[in-house]
Length: 426
Image 1 (tube, rainbow, N blue to C red):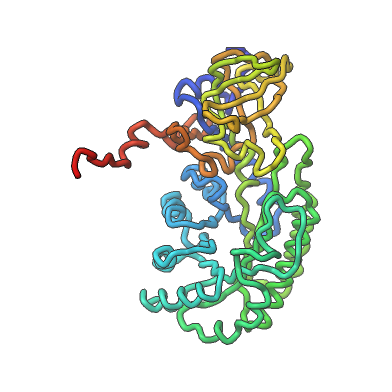
Image 2: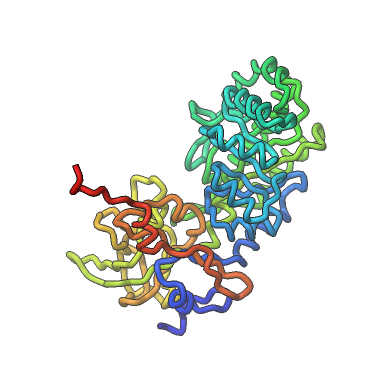
C-alpha cells in the first residue's frame, strides 16, 4: 500500500480493513463530535437537538450522540429498544410515524417517553384508549401538522401537500372539542416536518417561522399552552459537484431569530430541531476493496467487493441522472488522478454502479476505495439481501481506537431463518 494511504485518528485504513474485512462502513467519532458541538454552540438554548435514528440506527452512533446531549426521534419498536440500550433517557425521546401499531403505542406509554407524535385524530383516540387500559392518566401527545403553507428547496417534501404524514391544519383547527374531551392523553404541543435535504438557508428559516406561527395559532384555537414544539429539521448535505453546502451560520441565525420571537410568548416551551443526515453523513465512509480492474469498449471499470447492495443512496438518491457521491482512493490518498474509472460492485445487475467516470489515482486490485459522506442511509436504506451477500461490518473509531459496532452478516445468519419444506412427503 502507498505511504499516502488515509489515516483515521492516526490509524491506517489498511489496518482497519485487515482487521475487520471489507466492505465496511467506517465512522469517525471526531467528525460526529465536531458536527454536533458546532451546531449546539450556535443554536438558541431553548432548542434541543434530537437525532433521527432512521438516518443511522447503529447503537454506538446513537449512544455517542446521546453522550454529547442529543435526544432521539424514533419510529419503530426496535428503535425504541435501541435508544433505551444506548442510554437515552425516556424524557428525551419522541415517537412518530404514520402507521404506529397498538403494540408500539403501548410500548411508548409503558416506557414513559417524552411524547407520542400523533399523525391522525384516530390515533389520538386510540392512544386515549390505550392509556386507559394501562391505567395511565398523563400521557403526552404532540399533534403532527400537515401545514397549509408551501415550501421549496426540499429534496423530498413531506408536508404542505396531500401526504400520509400528519393532520391537515384545517382539520386541527376544528378539533378543539375532541382535545377537550381527553382524560388520559394531554396534548401538549405540535410537530411539523416539511422535508429533507434543504440546502438553502432561506427555505429552512421560512419553514421555522411558519411552523412556529402555525403552532401559536393552533394553540390559541385549541386552548393549549404549548409545552413542546418540534419544528423539524431537514438540514441538507451537499453530496454532488453541482451542489453548494448549506450556509449553517445564516441558517442558525435566522432560526434563532424566529425562536426568540416565539419564546418571548411561550418562555417555557421546549423546542426541538430533529436532524439525522446532517449529524451523521460526514462521519461515514463506505470502504470497498478493488477485486478487478478491467476495460470494456474503452471504458475502465473497477469491480469492487461491495456496491449498491450496501449503499443504495450512492446511486443518486432517486435521481434520474446518475450523480456521484465523493469517491476517493484510500490506498493512494492525496495522489493525483491518473485516470477515469467507473466503480461497480459485485451484483449481477447493470445498476450496481456506485461511481460513474470517477477521477482516481491509478487503481490496482487490492486497493481500498472510499465513498465519502456515507454515514447516513447506508445499510438501512439498501437491499442488503440481494444475491445473499448480507450486510457489511460497521466500525467506529473513537479515542484513537477502532471498535467493531456491527458484525457483518455470516452465511449462517442468512440461512438459519429459512426453512426447507420436505418435498418427499405428500
